[in-house]
Amino acid sequence: MTLAEIIRDIHGLDAELTKLETRYGLLSADFYHLYKAGELEQSRDFIQWVGYYEAKLERERRYREMMYDHLRELRRQSGLGAIRLIPEQTPAGAS
Image (cartoon, rainbow, N blue to C red; front, side):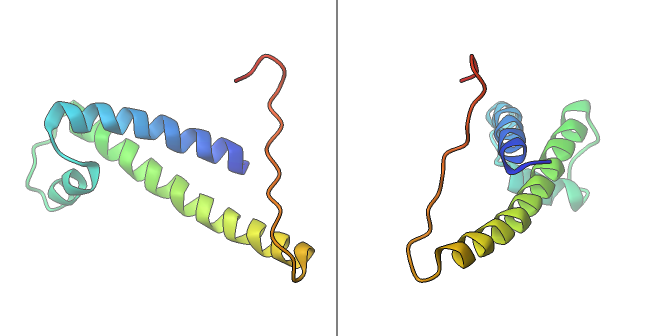
């Protein structure tokens, strides 16, 4: 999985989490704490919410791991100069 794919996944998961947070009036981190403590019932929405949230946490962990490696390489390449970030190329017709 590439960094770009991980970033897209995180944004997609955020969209799903936002829907649930809005529906239940609770941010995902707070929901997750209550759910893991056994204070919430087992509903279809809640099981799905846990899945999305855990997937997001895993993607963020993987992102940080890959990004730190990438930045380390960019620092090595730049020497004492500024790090140069180059935008990703998007396929024709994609936005």
